[in-house]
Amino acid sequence: MKNKWRKLVALSLGICMLASLSACGKSDSEEPKPQEAAGEETPAEGSETGADSKEITTVTLWLGSWWDGEVDWLCKQFAEDNPGYELKIELQPIANYQDNATSAILGGQGPDVLALDTLFLPSMMSQGLLLPLDDFMAEAGFTADMFTKCVYDAGTNEGKQYALPYRFTCSALYYNKTMFDNAQIPYPDGRMELDEFYDICEKLTTDGKYGYGIAASKNDLGNTMTSFAPFLWGAGGDFLTEDLSAGAMTTPEALAGLHAWCDLYNDGLVPEGCINYAITADLFPLAMNGEIAMLPMGDSNIVKIDEFAQQNNFEWGVTLHPGYARAAGWSVTIPSSCKQVEAAEVFIKWFLQPEIISQNNTVLPGVIAAQDMGKWADPIYDIYIEQAEYAIHTPNTPAWSQIQLIVVEELQNALSKAATVEEAAENMNKRIDELLK
Image (cartoon, rainbow, N blue to C red; front, side, top):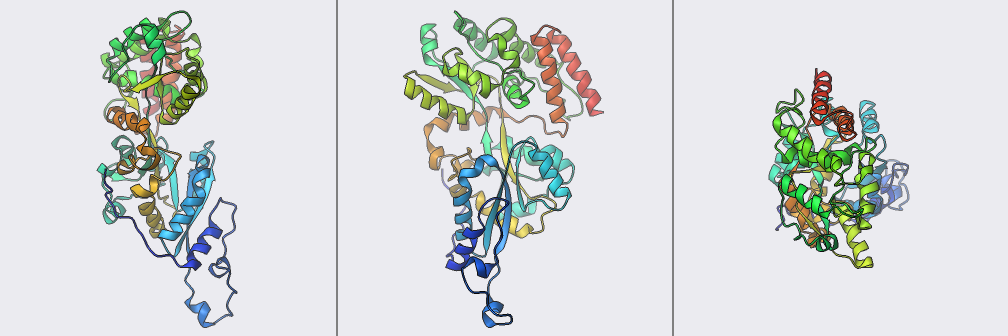
């Protein structure tokens, strides 16, 4: 796939490079004066050298703490490619990330560029905490078709674009070839219908081994949505009505999806502990130990299981997940408190170039042209690019965090048989409607 943009290349003066390197780092680093950063004597006041010295503009960026290994090259290359600018990266833990960002913006202390999980966007857009990027996109030559659609759309609100995705992820269907061989079942190939998937799970479940694993933990709502949503969407249902004004969990399609997922548990085709399991913490180890034949698995875990398989001599495969996978991602935004909008735009235009974002070793790029560059050209990631066509983002509403908690609580009632599937769906709708009033 060819690049759609030309790389912004400029010759960098040594003074600019040294200045950028000295300022690159975390939030507690001290920002040097340009002359000091270059290792020069501070010129006397009013001297010709002081009057002509070029000021360095520092762009502050918030990223998640998992980007720790990428900080040095980002700072160095940004300064090299953009003379007169330097990058200061402030790494943030995921705990309270959105709350901390909101507080910083409201206090006028937000960064110039803010990375946000797509799940955070509805609330922040609705509060007016982000600047629209439409004019910038037109100037930079960015168009919607340059980004993975399901995560790009998460940054749209009332016809304006507030976020551009640099990361995309979803789950595809991992399967253990040995367990399929033992059950004398052909390997899954392509996107199965839900009833076909149930039948395969039934054939694979025997002697303490299970066909599949679901996640229903209230302690990891995102994992539970990754587990449940493909079945809801695969049956043609959805969480909310099209206008996002009310719950839609009692439609015939939604009920079919609820039954398809809950029946896996109530019919014993997944481990009994799944009612309290998360995918990565609980189901992934069971898959590695050969106790679960199939599992929704993201791109980072597929790399881990590939390494494990090579060390332990077992074979695995990955294909499209039944239904529609839950799409997720992270985007770059400009907070409404930004005092250097032009500088923020310089960084975003640079960062989202395919040849730049593809250099990261942390996240699968949300820029389509970057998805076959660098490490991401490895065929192991191909299935996730294919799965993107069958991936949906959760509803773009500020109330989503409360809605998913309601759904998970009622799902647990259905799994534990404290309520029928129909009763759980009725309760979901009632509680969602009260929330959205």
